[in-house]
Length: 200
Image 1 (cartoon, rainbow, N blue to C red):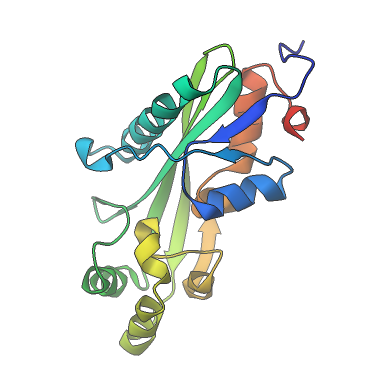
Image 2 (image 1 turned 45 degrees about the vertical axis):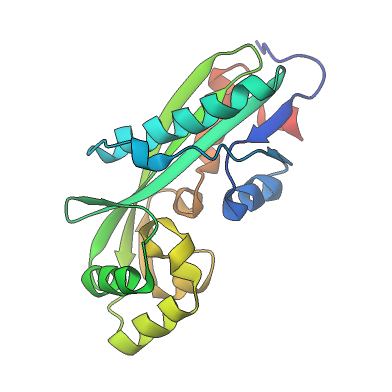
């Protein structure tokens, strides 16, 4: 039984991430983008899945009051590596140092997903994908960081860009590493009584 209204609900993405928007568009969902501008430095949670879910909740809940009858989605991603949580690097030097540590190693990319339904129900989930980094040399690391791409990405890489050249394999959901797990989104919508096609 579906609890969705007969008319197509608006889908709001509480994120400025171009990659997340493109994932949704590729899946047939054309979101209204409304970045939350939430100050992420306020959150100091050492557990990776709780960290990303907490941030995603704050983003979604900051935006939701602006939309009375919409599905609002908040997301946040971090890389857990060697017992540390890494978001976007602070500088080129930071990105280079991270890659020198990560090369040839394995990390876990966590993304928090929060949906707030038109009726106000809130659902929160975290997804994790294991990432195997290639053992690349210092010159390649420097060239990649100088491209600017790693500076805008959690974990200092974008698998859907140049960074895809330096990832040997993944264990888990591929789209989760880009910033939003499409299979998880489908199951979360179903828990709220919707089908993905309700937003096409």
